[in-house]
Length: 534
Image (cartoon, rainbow, N blue to C red):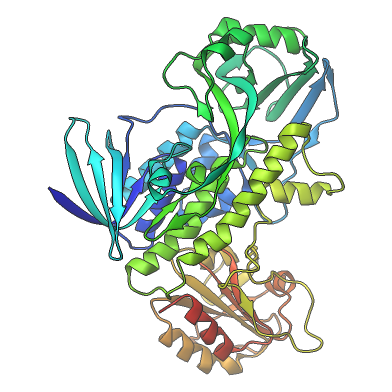
């Protein structure tokens, strides 16, 4: 029997759940399947970056995430038992800090969010194979009772991890290598008085002349941490996972974890209350394409690398955030012909940079690159510097002589700005308040209300595709009574976006600047939109 769906998402980890939730939020129907009968409860991924928290704010789940997590204040490294100076994770200006939130909590929050949007995860359902043609994808699914079903979908998205069935089915290259070391993880409580909110790294010389390693990342709870460490030799012989955790045999016990702690941590604090443990291996690989035809890959299905800097799950969720709105437009028949191709064009360079950087840092045991300033390092680790400057979706009208310098360039993340006011509201708004909800947002900034007629005409023409907001400069004459405009009361938007007397900023659904014109040029904006909309 064959059933149909608009989009089939394979894998219900953080990446697949983000993909399905964003498709639903953008008005597209989908199904999401996972071969596991229930969530694992593993704390594989822990760190949540500031950019991901901005994404979750737009999705509507950031408050739940913050309530379930613990803020990361920094990191302390011990070398041969001696503590170095703390590396402080300062909150980047105008955004969120760094949050520790175990993967099982991320999956819970996103699963509940997806259910509120009307879609449930179909568990115990495995993708066996698929074929595609110019009109769609036919997928063969194996159900928990041993039967098989065929699903016909317009699009297929593989969020199914390092051993992705979708990637293998597409025949995508996945070049890279494997680190020789094997590791073990443990989710435990540690009886010590280390400063709360700090990740802890313990390095020492190993008997074989190499480096012994223990990394402790705080989790919600009383002195609870996720510990990662080199596995002992007898476990290395028993299991050699290519990448990720070993699922077919037990993980290390408390005694094995305690042995490492005794060897590396001053005072030999006791570990206890083991919630979960596993062996795991690390590889670094990147697909040669992020999709082919009507099928795509996201997250670990597209890129795997060391966990240095907690980049993996965050990068994967933002893969999904980039692709979902484009797929939703395609499913509506509203996408320009080349829109879906921009997913690979934009996200593969990001994956390549993340793989290269995390491998480099893992090999040198460093926190950043030589010569990189502290604020730049934090912004990069927080994924606030991800940009798509060469994308077909990034453009601008040429600046005239004397145009102001600065402001986010096309392809860069659109930063927040505070202090926007509106008639009838006794409280200020943030720019991010205007970006909530699916679709593009066009901000028209002016030091006079004379262009409002043209703005209203444009808003009518773009209804259903683009939200248009007019923002008046602090000293601009008041508009006609009843006009739905905002005022840049403090000048924060003008300063952050370097507007000059007038400007137009088109902000994409994923929070990146798609186009800017200084001064405002509505014809240029309209022409640029043809790169996105049919």
